Image (cartoon, rainbow, N blue to C red; front, side, top):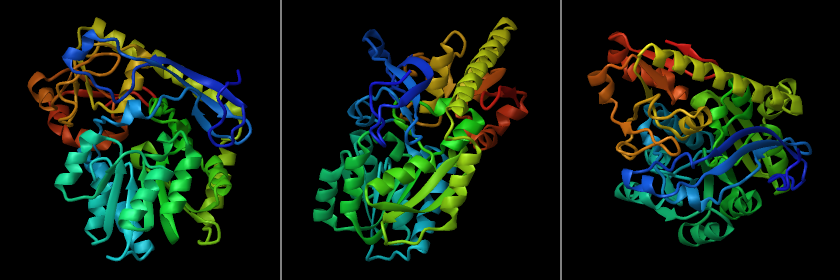
Length: 409
């Protein structure tokens, strides 16, 4: 079924639905007890494929202000992610010879973790992020920050205050952008001559290979492959000059773009485009198969939890990422099946998961309670979490890893 909303990359009306995850609450809107008496908004969570440009996207878009102005995810909560972001700052400084005279703008700067990485190199920095509740965290670290959405208007304000940037970064932000034309107009305005725009996003090819359906939630308007992204940049006067496939977050795409003629296109771009074609990313049948695998995981995990419950085993969750709430909502897992979820984020502890209303507690509870099984909702950080919870694991505790297939470790 073709959708009435046009494709956000090519504006065609040839976007066809292939996966419907139901009406769900916003994945990062954790609740406190007082909010339970109010009506909790829910929105359709549907994904479609554009038959013209190949872009995968949500067919129903939630206004960004409803999701990002009060935000509970912080990059520094994961040691793995912090190390990755600091490595990214090292790569950009080294590759593009940045110095104290250069400015870096980080779009979607969150708590400033990436900007702190750049500051180690004495590079000038400014962050942009609409999350007012996170602004104080970066302010305490002396980081300049614009509280608002990045677009052509705020780009002009940044240039007036701080000048043009040698590099602009956007890590796990580009999939959130519904108005890509205005966004890229802002990037072009804010970049200095010869400057680079470096983005990282969950990679569609990895999502399909791992059946990572829980990557899908309302914040992620787009599910990027390199092919549609290349078309988008060319439409707005840019060229993709480098493309890298990374393991972080169960698979990411790192893309570097420059204005047309200002950079040299690396062989990595064509190599990755060929991989995408070989994997069938330009075929609708690929996405129908992904949907079928998603429903199989739902069946398998629901049955496993049902069996454990009937055997009087206690099951809790670990990790309260947004992706976990897609999984909980899609499977209709509630407090009677998982009595709580442990998470290191102090911003989430004491709150309840959106939609399913499961309490979030400190990871210390795993040691004191010794539950029989832990459903690993943040399965993309499995190695880090298993290391952190080695004491629980050694005491006989077992972890359920739900994706790409249900297994117990």
